[in-house]
Length: 76
Image (cartoon, rainbow, N blue to C red; front, side, top):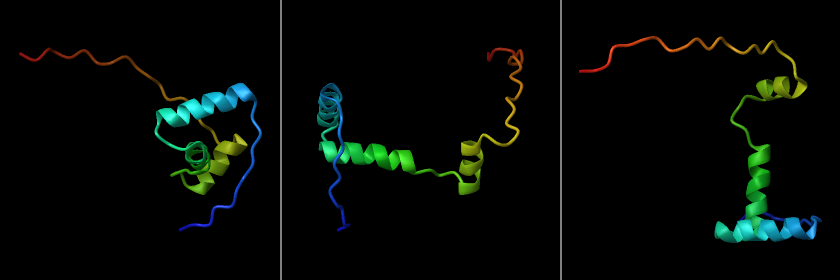
C-alpha cells in the first residue's frame, strides 16, 4: 500500500458541490476523483525534453498544409 498523506484544499461551495456530484456519477470518492485529475495533469507520455520545449514556447512549430482530399472514384 502506498503512503498517502492527507491534503487539504479550499474550494468555493458551488465548485465542491459540482465536484462531489461528478465523483458520485463516476462511482468514485471525491478524494479518488480529484487524485485522478491531479495524476492526469502531471503524467505525460511525451519525452521530458519535448514537454520542456512546449512549456517554453520554443521551437519552430509550424502548422502543416491541409490540402483538400483527392478525388477518388466510388467503389462499385
